[in-house]
Image (cartoon, rainbow, N blue to C red; front, side):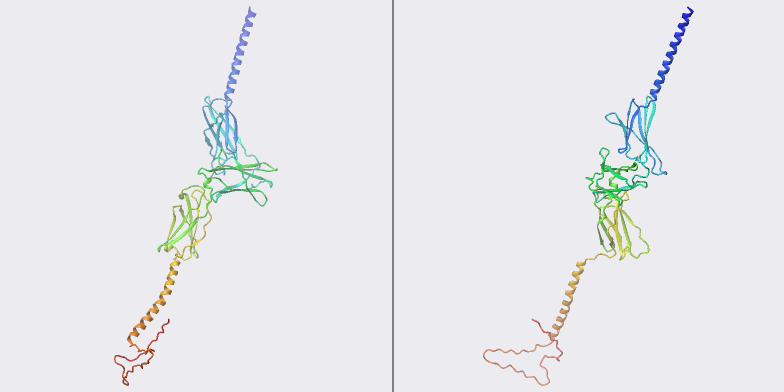
Length: 414
């Protein structure tokens, strides 16, 4: 009996130990399950700057963050935080439109699951030799519908580097490669020309990415925040600059340039360069917002005979100045040369006429003071009648006559 009792006690102790061991294992398994992140399949589309992931358990709160190195050490580095969206296939995503990835990034998804905060980090590194990617990228729209983009090879770019430019106007569009590359004397692609930009929209944003290939090394890509199209347009110089003079002021007028986008004239910004040759100092430029119409008035005292003006324009919120307009001289007031010519003709005609009238009037007065000189007429009618003889006394003048004076004879031309 004692042996049996001892065996039973041993069996009970063993069962208790197994129960305790099983409980501990289950607890550890549950704890391990809780420590597993609910976030899986984190992926980054570097072109779209889109981070995607899935969940294996339900979450109550969620957010995504991106940390990117600043463009210079002096600039602060603040993360960008977004609230995730969900696609139809239950994939969560965040799009970081205004952050660049070519300097690398850390992307984080943070969630709350069963009251526990959990997060997962995806580091991103731009592959390739540092300093071999394109640098100094810029784009300019000109002549309303054309665009040029340019860049320079990186300082450590291999000789056989071959850059490629991709661009798209929406995150929902596929990218398109440049169709007309510009090359430098060494044959390296350093730019792209766009023949036609299509119909303009006020909301146009252009996305660009420059990557490259080489047989020597991988080439890191270069990406950018979206280019607001209306801010990269370089306008033509102001057109139809005219000047008038009202006796006290010089009035200068010009037209707004043709532009790609339907913008208010008040977002145009003009610079007027007014100079006087021989002046000891250069005059300060005049800046003026666009108007309808554009007018600038100068007092007469501010204008010299050799004063000139030229004008250029840009958008109020960019630094892309147009070329200067042709330089115009505004120092000499305008004259009506047709009126001057008519006046000269009238004067040339009137002066001889007045002289002739004076001469004729003088002759007429003198003619009235002299008696008419009798004329002898001969009439041949078949008989001859001798002229009548008038007897004058010697030394006496005829009655009513005066002393003779010199007579100016005017020959009448017929």
